[in-house]
Amino acid sequence: MLILLVCASAPAHAQGSGGPYVPTPTVIVDELLKLADIKRGEFIIDLGSGDGRIVVTAAKRYGASGYGIDIQPTLVELARENARKEGVSDRVSFVAGDLFASDLSKADVVTVYLLPSTVPKLVPKLLKELRPGARVVSHDYPLEPWVPEKVLSFNFEEKVMISGTTRTVLYRYIVPPRAPGR
Ligand SMILES: C[S@@+](CC[C@H](N)C(=O)[O-])C[C@H]1O[C@@H](n2cnc3c(N)ncnc32)[C@H](O)[C@@H]1O
Image (cartoon, rainbow, N blue to C red; front, side, top):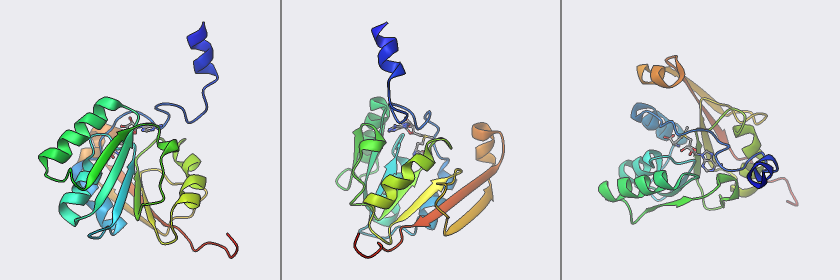
């Protein structure tokens, strides 16, 4: 009974609210990082980082550093292991926790692949914590009501197993300058 009550009173963004683990196919990781325009020395954060592939690839291929957070500790362990295997553990870290409680202030780039019902809830946090000019790339679901600066559509066979269609959409957002006095 107690457990039921605790679950019933949990906030909307409680544990796992961003959805299940579905890895971004590697071909889409490449497109996503290109669209994010990640550069050497920049800092990337993947919210709901799964096996760490986005942060690890950004570090290995683009010379970035970064951080991933995931609610599932076993995935965090896997991401750390992947970072070790790829020789980038000195530049990336992974933590177990709720992405809504993470600190985004260091990020030049944030990536998300979360439920369509979750991504809009992130918008106030992204706009408050990210520096002006930081980029956000969302895989498949728009961060409404924020208007994307660029949208790319692709067809990838790798997506059929995931979403039943080849269609993939990447949305890029750029944090605007702060209004005077903020
Ligand atoms: C669709 S998968 C994306 C994994 C990875 N970003 C990728 O693109 O390959 C979403 C991930 O978000 C994690 N997740 C869901 N809700 C979360 C939350 N509230 N806090 C942290 N991670 C969460 C899940 O455990 C899952 O690994």
